View 1 (cartoon, rainbow, N blue to C red):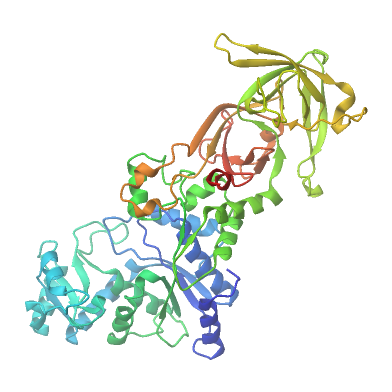
View 2 (spheres, one colour; view 1 turned 30 degrees about the horizontal axis):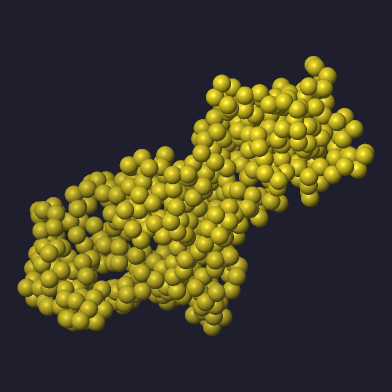
Length: 559
């Protein structure tokens, strides 16, 4: 994210003023789901800023919640960060620090700054107070250090049930910042941890773990979104009250890390809540975490978004001090700009209608040599075969077209892109009145855009040679939701756009697509940008996904 922003200015000034020798950041996801576009902003911020300023950035898994975390999510996160184009200096896990975290908790008990509490969750809420009323001390708050140490050891030994005891920091039950009203720093969980196994039955809370992990790794700047603003006081309190060696991992930064918050960017027509994403996946509203309608990074990748387009999107929306709402067109324009410059042009007919050119010699064919990209000679050329029978799109024909329909109709003339002008002479229909075939004639003097007699032919349509066409399943994806802010509703499932996916099972593509690489991107002329589906596309079955339309059709629909 090369644009200047307040976080970059802070980091640059800290280096310039000698506060730190270099910038050291981290991207710290919890491995309880797949990354989405909101994470991409944090990835680009942390890795990009460290790279720009000659610093370092760790990938760290904050894995302190054993019930919800697993290796599948870890591997997906690692793959997504690498796919975006970033390399981490160190791969870290909060679970690597469990012994140290436990020792720091004991240290707080010994200092009289933590105690074991037996209030249940409901009682704890009652004692905590409100925004306008101070909390009150738990009866357990006055326990002696020795009693707390003994109870904490019994917690670790598995002698209590879940929820029977917790370890709380002893701070200030009258603090105007509710976060500081004796927060829980350890709880009992009898759950198998995907890395630590069954060694532990007590697990540290995020707010206790995160700041210590930052310090142990020598992190200088801990960038968080605004919802962690009230937690900053707890972040600082923990680090101020434990005895930690800043150089445990050999880093030369001398000061404790500093937490700084920035605004979250919420994208229209999407949900980012992991709870809601999990519901969509588990209840079958989408095909999986990599459903191309989701803005998970695996979903965007499968849909055909490129790493460059997502990095450019993150740079475009920038970093601000307030939460913001980003229009979907910003994301769509980012991939359009990328693919406009890099995608090969081909013909693809999604709803094929057979067209026979009756005056074209039977059994003969020819080819037209065309550029793969109209503005990039380096992308070369391809041969498009042409013959007596071709396919056009059903939408390019109307039985009774209006005056401004500049495509094909009975008695009308259009030009085939790169080919000849044709005139529709006969329409074949089935018993239900559906058009199943067109009979046309062509003008052999109009090849390659020529019109010797000077007549004007307004309509130009795309086509595919029937003899040479590739059959494919083409999936046209659109926005998953029909409302711009579905996350605001608990009934967000009811807002799913019924037209978010259209499948064309027998689309016809020009044969050059068969020579494409799995990573190739295409512009189907007049249709949109497409890619091979990375999961379902095989040698036996060609499957392609629409990444984005050629232009913003939603703006027109709303207008």
